[in-house]
Length: 287
Image (cartoon, helix red, strand yellow):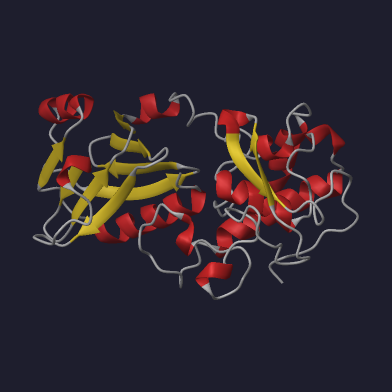
């Protein structure tokens, strides 16, 4: 599933390609979008901006209309030049938006809706988002308080709650917990203030490290281009995610994996570096 960093990069790339341009053609395989386009055509509108909020992508058009998309497990936005061959088959296409210079195609998206400013403000899931880790005004204090408000949750599960803090997905969940040497199955109630602060700081730093302006702007929805270790080799890019049974990059112990509460998502951790006890020290794994 695309996480906050992927959606941020997607929005940034789409904004650069489309903002200020007039839509020349709109096509969709989704009946709900097609009905809106029939009544209030997209063609002729200007793309005002493309932004990200957590895992949501918002494409705003002139005339108070916003296309809201959420990629869930398999969706992705691609951009092409007119006439360029698509990377994915047309059968996966759900939305095509053309301007004079660019063709933006959304593949396999499962959540796509048109909204006005009024309906967008009330949209469940979006309106209840917690502090966005990639926003310039990210409020770490509120994020910590939101985590503390869910003492019954395991920290790995709490990090996936977008109403707590927005942007962390299954990859970063495991990576952040390893970065602060905290077992992902510990309850929030067992964590001290310094531990919670370290979790939030590390989550913000990991996501920001993956959206630096010098990073490739290709729109990807897989983990191959994501990095938390700071190492250059692709096969060494992540600490524990997807590495069950492999040696920990710090201590050599075998990385473990198990399914965790929310949607039974898999979680990875090192049993030696992340014992099921209070962490003694916070290790800044980006240094």
